[in-house]
Length: 297
Image (cartoon, rainbow, N blue to C red; front, side, top):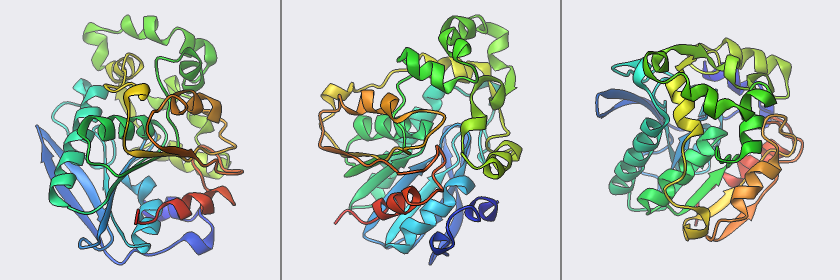
């Protein structure tokens, strides 16, 4: 499945990492599948978090680029996605993602005494922000998106139809109880058709049963729309934050991420990925994103 995504990158960015290992990490009652890419002894380490339409294989082409630049990259499949095995899919909620991201960040921080970066794509951007600000010990955060679900415009953008985003909170609260565990396709509730600007790539994502073609419980969506970061941006004094937002994103426009980013108190920089869509594969934005995936030293 890695190749299904990698073939969309420009040929010069399709690299083979020096080392790749598929591993398992036991967290609570979940067997988390974790790809480890690049030299395990590399002085720099990065954890990459996918979003609602992804999994480790989708992020792997970018992880391979970072590994080729001298970073050991850790890419987990979040609960409900990829090859990660959960005890009860119907019970998955967004706070589980946050708790797992924090636990993995803590584990990697303890195991590695060099620079540690977190990279978050799409919905994974806010997840990486939460892990970095809750756990600490992170040197740099790179996010392609910082979508605050409390923002009404952000909810409208994330939803399949703007009107659905406007009523997402009250509507999903009606699904509490037995309906909370009902699994629905992502495309029913989210604007998955805008995940990429290349229709061929959209088709690959939507046909991927471990990613964009997946089903998730209604309770997961409700818990995401009701979530809030533990550390408000005005109180976030670290790590250094890079917002690498695709400039031609048809799903979540950059101005929505900038609303949250502009409030962050920590050192930061905004790097628009020119001509790139939500899934950034277009030049020159994808090359700019690749340039960011370098050691922090």
